[in-house]
Length: 232
Image (cartoon, rainbow, N blue to C red; front, side, top):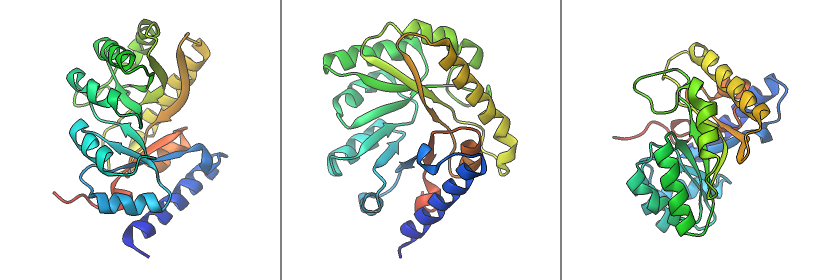
């Protein structure tokens, strides 16, 4: 059994444990593998093990891997997205979800490019739940108004929310942020804003995904817990 296979088994077991702890099924949590800096050989091994939701944080790296790897991958764009790079994402048919929508101007550009490609682009709105000046995303108190503003765009579909919390050694330190995101998620769902769906809550990375799952994550973004430490 390879290192990747062993790590994946441990990860899946921990996802199941975290979900069952709060009465959830592990099937409610989608594993999104972060492939930043990983070779195509490593990624192909992971695909053979049944992981087909892959994520990149840089458009150039996503483009390169999109062209080289199998066509049946569900690609996710999880990094900060510059408006001048949206055209590349819009042309990738299998790039099915942008996790980092965080401004009206970006939403407008995504809608325009998606219309040009005759498609609808699914997005998550990034929320800066920790109000961390080093993170991107909307302030929580501005979320509802923002969603109302962008709901007019016909070629952009909001599917939920995403957050990136501060990196800490003890994930219990960020539990309240995850809890706050779940509360926002439910608040927006109740608001029933036309054109806005609350299906996905993307939160949790390799060091804190178990706590994120316990607090309601439907997607976790995992890199090093699968592949091992990144080589720089």
